[in-house]
Amino acid sequence: MSHCPYSPDLSPNDFFFFPTVKQKMRGQRFSSPQEAVEDFQNHVSTISASEWKECFQNWFERMQKCIDLKGEYFEKQ
Picture 1 (cartoon, rainbow, N blue to C red):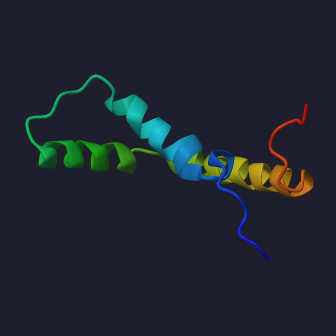
Picture 2: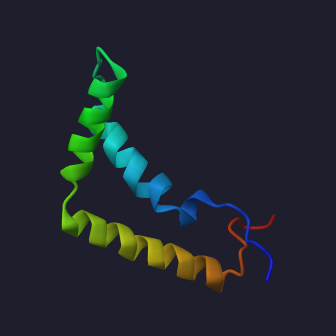
């Protein structure tokens, strides 16, 4: 089996995790890298179990869609 092409539709980090934390941190300024890391960790810890559950439900739906379309993510013209 060959490796399927990369698709951001199939990565929870791309469609849920990074945008969620990025939105929470938007507009903030930090005096040190450590301060930024601590704020990042605080935001990650505030993501609720229900949000994670929804993330993975969406992920499974995206994977099934990819399987159903046999990897054809885009409509052919």
